[in-house]
Image 1 (cartoon, rainbow, N blue to C red):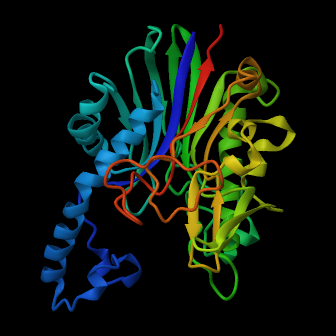
Image 2 (image 1 turned 180 degrees about the vertical axis):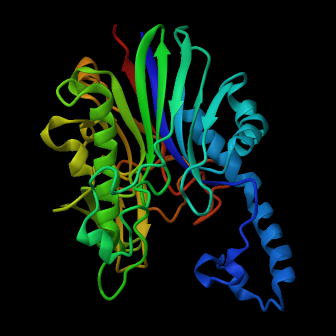
Amino acid sequence: MSLRLATFNVENLMRRFDYSGYRNQLNQDRVLSLYEIKDEQEYRILEQAREMAGADDTRQQTALAIAATRADIICLQEVDNIESLNAFEYGYLFKMVGQGYRQKYTTAGNDSRGIDVGIMMREQTADGQLIEFVRMTSHAHHTFEEFGLYSPELGELGEKPYERIFRRDCLEIDVKIGGVPLTIYIVHQKSMGSPRNGISGRDITMPVRIAEASATRRIIEDRFGKDHASNKRWVICGDFNDYYERLVITGDQFSGYAFEPVVESQSSLNVLLRDGFAENLVARRPEIDRWTLFHSRGPEERHLCQLDYILASPLLARQNSKAIPEIIRNGQPYRTPFPPGQDVNRYPRIGWDRPKASDHCPVAVKLDILS
């Protein structure tokens, strides 16, 4: 029997307005900076209008991207709460896939903006196998000190030993597919942030992501046993906000783009990939065709990279040695440069920068679940 599993950062699936941009320009949308706003009340009115004006197109495209995964189970990042997930599924996704994802789960994590991880599941797989929810376990409460992960590098960032490791959560979901158990871990690691004092945001925040990845591995090894985890059926899905390789982009639309593969010396992914602990299934795709996000800080800093992962246990990877994930890129904005031969037909009303389905691309894979 088979299962289609996907992961997708849906980018701010919010049920409420964020007014923090009034006091923090870093959080203010660029269109509002074009106007002179006299007070907070006026700012709130304009922010509501701005957000609602683009939300319908954006969520239609988000739903199209999810529908394209054809997933039986989809892991999600940047979900406000279960109410926002229900409203989105009923108002948008239902119109495309019908009676689809009736089982939905999320829980409040540690993110200050309230963006959480979650999951949607069908009641049956496409080939008719029952999808049974068994239990959900949040690991948002674990601290650096508890797991022995506190380091001087974390201290330099202002982190305290008693503070929580995960910026959002490592959400553990146990399911049965046709009676066969599968454990899914959903993560959304700390964002990279902006450069400071000539040091990249990625390097500055790396210690936190390494701690998060180490904690995820610890949770799995504690659950299944250090010597037995490789022979169990589990998968880690989510937005790691990190990469170990990327495609550096040079050139422009007039002279043509060039894409140079670069391998990074340090990555939080190494914690989960070393010693064959897990396999990045997307790495089965060609090196130039693994990206799930376009990063740009202007023409001098542009690259394509994989931030969204499906990491399979050795057992699951062996049982699916020929499974190659799909990356759905039709919801990307037109500003995203595609390597030769990879361009796709964008969804209706996709813009140069927005609206778009998300800044991330969904990743989906068909897995055989063998007893």
